[in-house]
Length: 246
Ligand code: MG
Image (cartoon, rainbow, N blue to C red):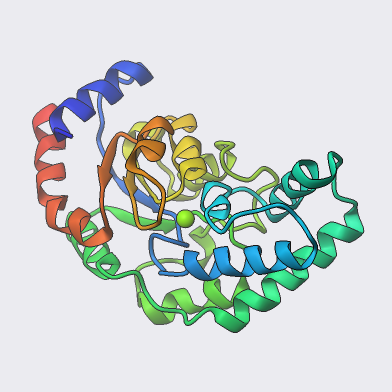
């Protein structure tokens, strides 16, 4: 995908007059941490235990939405009804317990390079995640020292509506103090890409999971990279293209 063309397309489809990035809003699972395989495994094992119809890959498609929404969809598919509040609580607690057991807290390869490049360009860096896992949120400062301010993070505790609703990214813009055309979103999940696009933000997808590239492009990604290292390597080109488009 040519960067220059993507920028022109973004400006045309959003009706913006320019793209002047001042902040980058990073998703967490599958972008900053190599944690999605543990989420998928925990969800899948919990679903199987409760005889809910699922595949491991399904949870990559559901990534970004709230835990309650995921559990509801599993109940609708399997039993053709919504999950009760009690079922939601039980299933989510089991899934969270397994995730904490499996998760090794490994950083996503290349993510530190992306953060370094972004910050060298003078842009703010923020996290916008649907995760309510304290274990990961608390680890951020340890993994990426000085990159993120706790009070600027958007987590499951800050928003009512999960991705693909734009609310999390709109709140991210607010916390950064910038407009939609003054930010980038970096996302790995189709619903996360949809949320970034719905918030009117130039959205960069990194395909760090098992889904096809087309799923992320169909979700509306403005640019697509196979991994965070590739994004880091191309960062200077993105910034050059942005400056040329000004
Ligand atoms: Mg993600």
